[in-house]
Amino acid sequence: MTSKEKIALLRQAMTKQNIDAFIVYSADPHMSEYLPEEWQERSWLSGFTGSAGFVVVTGQKAGLWTDGRYFVQAPKELHGSGIDLMKEGAEDTPNYIDWIIAEIPQNGTVAVNSLATSNTNWEALEQKLAAKNIKVVDLPLLKDIWVERTLQGKKNPVFVHPVERAGKSVAQKLSDIRQKMEELKASVHIISSLDDVAWTLNLRGSDVQSNPVFLGYIILTKNEAKLFVDLEKLDVEARKQMDESLVKMMPYEDFFTELGHLENETILISPNSNQSIFETLKAANTFIKAPVPGNLMKAIKNDTELEGFRTVMQRDGVAMVKFLYWLTHQAGKEEMTEYSIGEKLRGFRAEGKNFVGESFGSIVGYVENGAIMHYSAPKEGSKSVTNDSSILVDSGGQYLEGTTDITRTLALGAVSDDFKHNCTLALKGMIQLSMVKFPKGTRGVQLDAFARLALWKEAKDYNHGTGHGVGSFMNVHEGPQNIRKDMNFQELIPGMVVSNEPGFYWENHYGIRHENLIAVKETETTEFGTFYEFETLTICPFDRNVIATDLLTQPEKAWLNRYHDWCRQKLENDLEGEVKEWFLEQVKPL
Image (cartoon, rainbow, N blue to C red; front, side, top):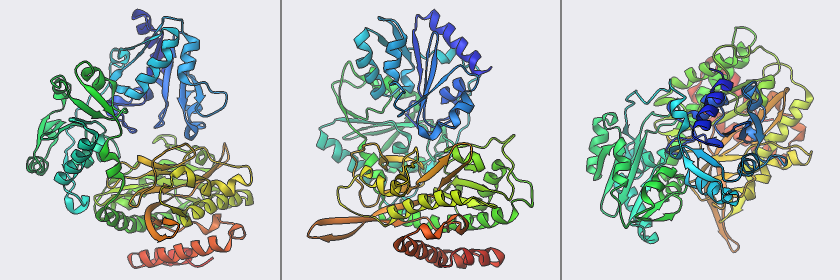
């Protein structure tokens, strides 16, 4: 079926149920960014495969709201679907709830699947739609339309992430979380986000592609901890760890039944949890809506986790150098496509110790496809790559000790002076953010301009955030911290790991992005307060052929030379032959 045919079936179901608008969020019951296959409802309905975005369907119209990362990709994937692209953040794009109010009659009905709708989104809908007496109902209409949906059938094992890598025991994490519960006067705490469940219990899995997590919930009280999971997935060591940590293991499908037994409790729960949880509990309990305490604890990496990052960065750097040598020397000599290049890179990483898999699907964009920020090359029909022009490669690995995420932009042949100019502007931004020193209490939004300033001076910009949090053998995107234009009140704290990835994109021509991972660390305390700076974690040279050296200031050039010398020290002993000779040329001073 085409997207157009699927939407026609959905509209038939809406008519039968007297539904005026149906919203398909990009979510599962755990509000994950990357979804298990059976929860990819928005992708199935619309054909749009980006990680962010949602669809609203009325009797006559349909719209997809997504952010600037996908303004180039979305129109291609929505072509012929009858779904209009709504560019979030653009001045002429209406808020989706305002759009619904304008499109459907007073006293109408909007339906969602409450299992895949956050409490935050549900309440925003109810409050704004009340102005036209429009009600919100839970009605999972796609359940009967997506008949070939693949339900979770594989028993992907759940295994232990040992304290030697986690740096903190399950008992200590539960104690820390219970202390926060006590401070907030909560009697029960519900943890539903998959990375928070996995982090809390020092367990990992593979239920979501590229994310080492598993489907599960936790109900935590002062004296009890219950994990709801497919019990067949728990390996022997995982069961033993749960028993030793006094965590009761219960079937995943019993979670809502167990919720129904809770009465007269004060429940600490994230407003980003699914609305079905709130519906089950609201009649007999009170809520404290607040971020999961473990979410911030998870973001502040301990010394063991930081050392794990440093370890895997060296391993990943070796794989990247071998890959970059292969790509720059074989392009034009052997047949290759964007897709096959991504597979080749995975192969280089797989040679490394404790490699588990990719941390996300590699983004390999050749020439104009580089301008599609989160481009995913199809296996069949992806663009052929030769020794001409530029290529953007954004990739990462999951290792038992940590997670990597790196982007390099390369010249495979002749590139224009204009390309080099813009490439260097983006690089200047990455270097400026790498060098910044900032006082305690600083938020990411206050540093974002450092990465954009060189571009802004020429009235240029990029339409994505500069930095996202990164997990420790965990999701490559994690919060609560970030570095972007949007206001986020979470301050940057020593131990937090974030990406540093300014870029530049010229639609239908080329894309540029440079990315390292960086960690917040304390540097000094003066009469003016405590100051922090960033430790660069990623170890891999930049392509000298895309840099207009004359645009770099002396401090920027000095930083880049120091960085390349550090790369040499870290990687040269693990390289040999022609690869090593080439690498040593790449890391020479500019």
